[in-house]
Length: 100
Image (tube, rainbow, N blue to C red; front, side):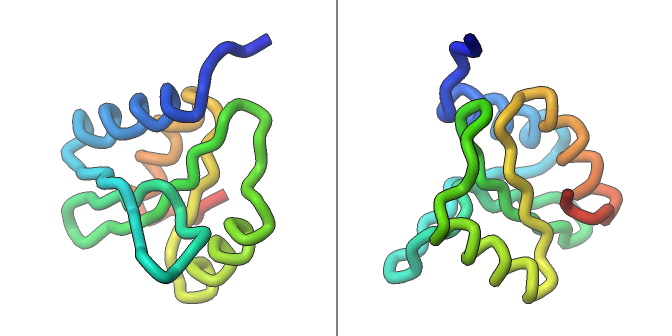
């Protein structure tokens, strides 16, 4: 059984983004529930969102709707539930690739 928790993965994400030259502040939006956990910012105006989950967990229905809403506005939104996903997410954001 995987002992990683959501906060462990989130911490790894924040550190990896920082080491890659970006920022990943906590995304808090009073009055707008279900927003992703982190907004990821890289040079050249690269912006994406990340919903971090414990291994094997999926976004709640409200979170899934908010993710679709952000995607419909043209934003990349990633759901990360394994640390191994982080490197690929960072590369996609930096190169302008599509979110999975």
